[in-house]
Length: 526
Image (cartoon, rainbow, N blue to C red; front, side, top):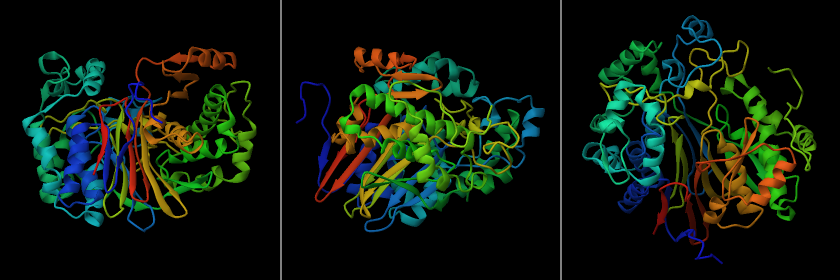
């Protein structure tokens, strides 16, 4: 029974259709499209287009996207809408530009050709029903006429003030009067409205070819980038359908996008955790187990995961019974240990949404510019704010994730889909950069192992083992923190919530939706 004194909202219940996003205007736009006869894909595109306007530090048309789509009664399919490095992007070229150890997030070399628009247009071509001008209508209106800034967006915007101020053009648009907008103040992006109109009228070519592409390439070149109009033209067809990867977890199948996304890490954490009776563990044991499994999975992610062609066979290897058993055996429930690769070789900010329509089609979609406000590099001629995903590339010759011409970097953004006996159970996703794979495992464990409702599973205190530190939210009891510290974890109580999430659980005649209370959004249905 829900505790109505908790100040937490219960799950949203509906019978026919539902949209869950991290922004109320985005949810409303998706729901409106469903009411106008659109399907799940139409509604998802409407919602994400609005979010690209009203949550500019988290997402935009200058970013990338991934999706899992389950047509009613059909198999789950995956879409890779991530962009590729320019043809001139080599380790040698970046070394010559002065980059030898890493690619800074604000560097033009952190900007791969954006893949989101290519992904949107492929989704629409193959599975959409309504015209794009109708789907984008609300997003265009908010971009042109303005929208009220919501509280969580305002908080994050202010936290990134100094970051945005480093780019003159971004500062002019996003720091009116030299400051971030306050909650309730209006903000507009008229040039973004023009871009959305071009995409609605011309499809992907309206973004990747012609005058708009030429302007974007010219601006990136002025910053020292290697991008050409030919690179952008090839980006129009960057998105493609791929076969999802999956692993079982206590009778369910968890579907993720294959590499270059980090969905493999989420599956590896779950496979490791499945060997423990989590429901019988104490809170301290559960947090410790999740931390240790996360450390092992991320250690392998960082060493081995890359664009699909650079890590062939990795999925099958890491999810094999032999490797999972080896990794599981390395977990000491009484002590935090450093992670190690299974074969011991030597090795020295995002939005998510999901929709279920009346026909039973379900989509899980994530769109990102990576860091807050991406690279902060804004093209003043087109209004496009570019992502920073190329910062994930390595500059180590021979590393699977080393930058190379036409290569995709390792991605943290991962939509998820849960099925049972071949039937879709729940589109779900977790935001929060590197946290996402760990977040998928924690959310599913809360629902499957602990029997929590969707919203309660999201609202539970979070922890994240990353970079040698166990981050915990202040809602985690002090006694739990102390017990974890006694096991050797370096505890850091975070000042900002860990990630966000959305999910819609499907059963006969009932949809149960949740939208993370750490964000401004909501799940709504009818």
